[in-house]
Length: 151
Image 1 (cartoon, rainbow, N blue to C red):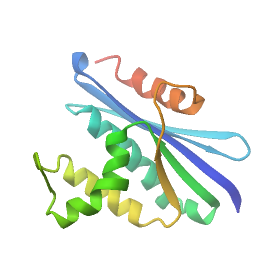
Image 2 (image 1 turned 60 degrees about the horizontal axis):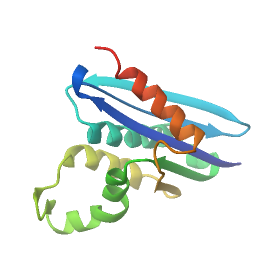
Image 3 (image 1 turned 30 degrees about the vertical axis):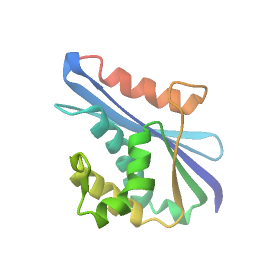
């Protein structure tokens, strides 16, 4: 088995074009990169951030990457998405997917994320500060930003 796989995700939305994009960059030995990105209209920034993580999880599961790597880490610069998965999900299940402010937003999409996440046993999802010093987080940010800059 190779040592570790790191995946950086991002999502973005621009009102002026009503266009969003999401994607991920996978970093694996020996210093290789794989980038996946897509765009769509009529969305939100949070949906694009969620879809970035979902795409990464689907990639891990489709290619059975847990069989290939000892450690798999997904890094996401959306504290909303990371908290949905790591902190709030179990409470939402217990409360019938209701929060103090009303029903959980993006529930159906988050259910897809959790279904993919639960297929894994060693994947960890962590928050990373966006627009900071991490070259891979900045690189996927540039990719998704470029996809939102034209109609």
